[in-house]
Image 1 (tube, helix red, strand yellow):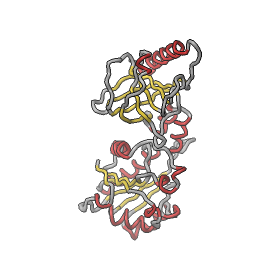
Image 2 (cartoon, rainbow, N blue to C red):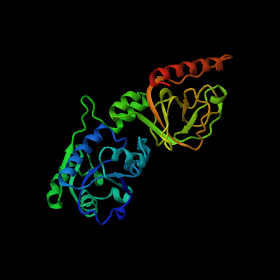
Image 3 (cartoon, rainbow, N blue to C red):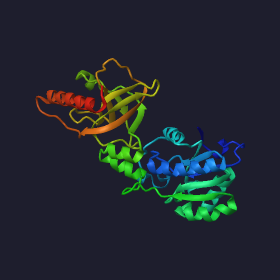
Image 4 (cartoon, rainbow, N blue to C red):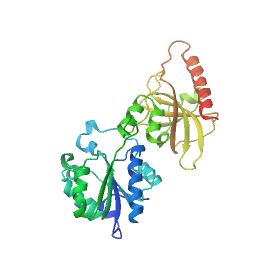
Length: 314
């Protein structure tokens, strides 16, 4: 897998390709249906498959106040795309100048001049170019004179049209099982473990803390059963996971993902890149109060751990 971050990165040796275009955030089952069709076209034509995506998300440039939180960063997206058959990713640096390109200019500059496309496969609702004037019909009309065939694929998952928006809606409700169904894989969050306030360690449940930000989609506040995987070694551990700000204690700054690896108090994960996998939601976040707040919290955490053990082992 190669990520090309500009037209200049595309090698001159690329003389033909099959192309699929989209944001591909999450690489969910709808995306995979499109990529499968594009892969088949690439194999039939004996050319590499290139996925064209945008960095940042176009909405972050055009209407930043409405920009969606991202399910996957560019590098993670590329790994997921490679796993389902994409050979190369062209990550176009989206800006206001590109937003003004007409559909024909997009076709000429991206599909014809840069990628020498012979087949273009997109989702049936794909729109592109200034004011979203380009669509599948435009691609089909432009294709014969530009040297490519075009195809649009319905992203129908039965009663639900698979989309990144649907996945984000599931996550906002804490429905990690519903999100996993749409993604075709478990919900995960990646990040670097940072030093926290040590309260979990004081309670007998040391956690690996991964900060979150408004640009990253994570499940709703609550407690989840799941797993933690070290990205440097591949080691995977069953974990009870808390998402939120820990309302029992005052002064906690920022939302974060805290993972307690079951029965392990000896792990030193500070500075380690990890992936947190969510299997099932156990409960919402609860603020314990009163003289016995700590005892009540520890009892609840013990119950969370045992329920996690029953779901993911350990």
